[in-house]
Image 1 (cartoon, one colour):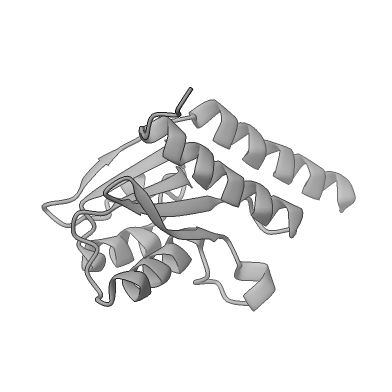
Image 2 (cartoon, rainbow, N blue to C red):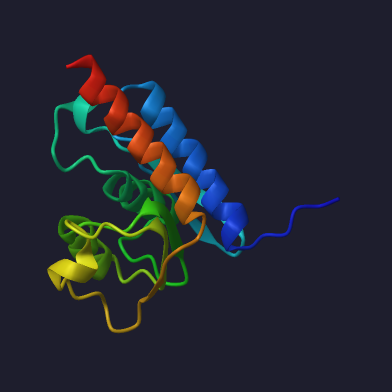
Length: 149
């Protein structure tokens, strides 16, 4: 049976990126950028690897997608990310003019919604896609980190 290209399908791909981050000891957040049902960018957190607080999965995905497209705007693209973007990533997504953002779990403390971050007027955002799975991975990561310290 052929897997339909829907939000769950692409969020599973973002979750695979989050698992890669987890294996590297990075906070397990993953992202993919899709246009016309084709993944044009895959990314995960690299803040520890690059020693760079701005190396969030979304930032890496924005850069990779812009390079793929040959321009800075991500019009007609959808970002799938395992957790609600933070204020920094929300701001970058505003400037990219991305058409759609789909996230897994909410970030009640640091997410762009509670922080009041404005997105581009033409950007739509929805969440809750595989929220339990994405949240469980994050919780497992932080429990293991606490137990090691």
